[in-house]
Image (cartoon, rainbow, N blue to C red):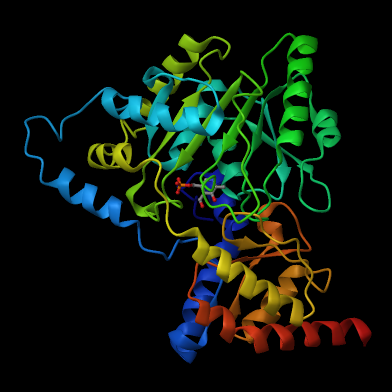
Length: 401
Ligand SMILES: Cc1ncc(COP(=O)(O)O)c(C=O)c1O
């Protein structure tokens, strides 16, 4: 038999992640066969709103800058003036006072997570994550020889602190949280963050080893009326934050974000040095220069979140009328309803037959649910109502048969 020259691990990963490819291929086929405007595609978390006007204006100004060196290599952590401005935003979000030295500009939150794991993980060390979670976390921890340890949340997708406590072992290096959450839309409230912080402090003492709290927060500014994303650094000093401007400024293709470390984090100089080196040797070298200069000026801006909120409310009515149950998203732009039948992949296929594209919960570590991204036009949401009703009726008829 011919020997495969591609890494076994990558071949296996491609197979395990093949549902994403299959979904994509199936979506493309349906759009070709029935027409783009007939398919309701809720499969991708690709923001559809235009970036704020201030972003566009700042970009144009920055692009016109012809000063010597504007396109040069720079320190791996990013442009010093930019990092100072980002530190001001982190201070507002987290209620501590980091300096620019505690900020590393990155290629998105994905780049941020990879440099964090590279900086802190020894082979076999564990990262606890509440499920459901962003599918790429598995790959990112594996990239750096770590192991992801998913734990259950409560039924409403809030943090189950005792489940996290039970999962801690001598190999635990970090707890990774993402709030507002992809895919559930849940925001972990301040009380649960305080409890988590106290747990980690206790464990740090008991185990004699730092357990980092990593907060992946690209949806921090996409929050609906009545909700608020609490500060984290204020509650726990061994916190590392990573985020990006992908969702709040609607610029995911520009690959710009940052990592911020608490000013009193354990072994701060070593950690910052490791993050810096990781940015360089993972091949990012530094975050894109032009985008660094732009986001520094518009770091407090965001897209009009009332549009996402309007869509959330519209979608909630439609899903309710179709007989689906869900926890109302508090932020981000995803619904994560319960599948009306146990096998959610079968339900997702039934939705496909109605020209509705969704993603099975198995992909987020939680079978029995499915994800719907509502970064699509209101018309697409409205058009989906009949399809949802038919798919639910069909699925329930099997359970009755
Ligand atoms: C929870 C979460 N973390 C990280 C990322 C990666 O963000 P970025 O594209 O800014 O690197 C995403 C992207 O969808 C996400 O949903």
